[in-house]
Length: 492
Image (cartoon, rainbow, N blue to C red):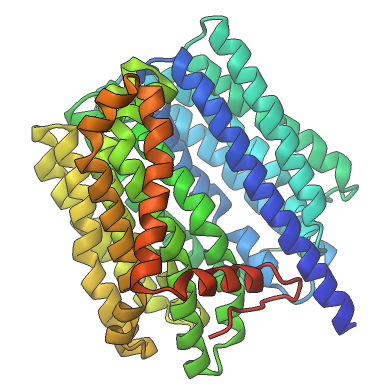
């Protein structure tokens, strides 16, 4: 039984990685094509619409899917109850979106968002209709089937968006992408799992899950507010097109984080949870994971920042030149990112939910205050506000790690110093050689083609000089992560 469980878990982790990787790659390809076909105003309009829909969708889900995942035994009565609770909430949220679309548009000063909201609001019940089916599949280690459906829906949705954009439909091409993806997901989900909910609802069964599901919903709302609050501030105080420019500037940073740090966080979440009874081992493994993430995340994002003014217009077109300048500034978020991404898994492993909530509340408050002060001075100031927030919250994160987890801060700093020094040196070399390299290459494309290997060579050389064994240790940790044993952790 134990062997079967380990195999199922390893198989599920593999397919989860395939699902995430394929989704990231394909979504970036679609984004690359759409950025060349659509304007900043159209991207900004869609971003402002999705902010509101994402908030209300979290309320519609009410954390019930997360609660179902942790139930020891899911009987048919409970499954039916949760399905209808989710569906009824989603219908209510859909009506709420339709009824308040005009009010929301007035608050952000963008009337064009109203019809987009009407279409996106109608998708909320569609998503709810497949939520419990997907949760049941995941409980049975059906990650392969879920990955296949996700890939198919993203593929067809992206194709629909590109066709619509080529037809000149503007922002409606992004709406077409969402509508197609949700419809495909619903059809494939119901076809894959033959379970059909019966018309029954037991309030007593639902009430027993509300404490956990509500806490999950509140946490998700807080983090979503933290991620998307700046879009609302920019849209109201600067303009809708500015939202599009800002979103594009962050797109490559998001992709770099998903490729370099998210896989490490995914493995860390499992590994740290298995070590909650052994505090010393948990701290040791946390330091190893932070080092592994730093080795790849810092050079990737800081390197992007150094060449962003050339890379972004080269990829997406000249209309996005301002996004390239913003990307150079936003890349500084990589520095505190290595710690902030692991705070959740560490505190979650030790059931320190109050620390997670405290960080979310403080970070949100600081972000909103600084962004409101910065917005009158333009997008560059707003980007600087986001960076300042991440740096200001870092001491609190470190304090909580030291006080409540026991992480020794000086050894942690010693662990991270070599990749930090190497990445900063690499970025400095790229900035100092930018002008002569531009003259030598002649075109942005040739400059990027020359700058990328130059940056990689400088980073590797500095690491080999100051910490010769670090590259070998990093490769060893990657091999440990790829082990088929569930929850395998890097060697200390």
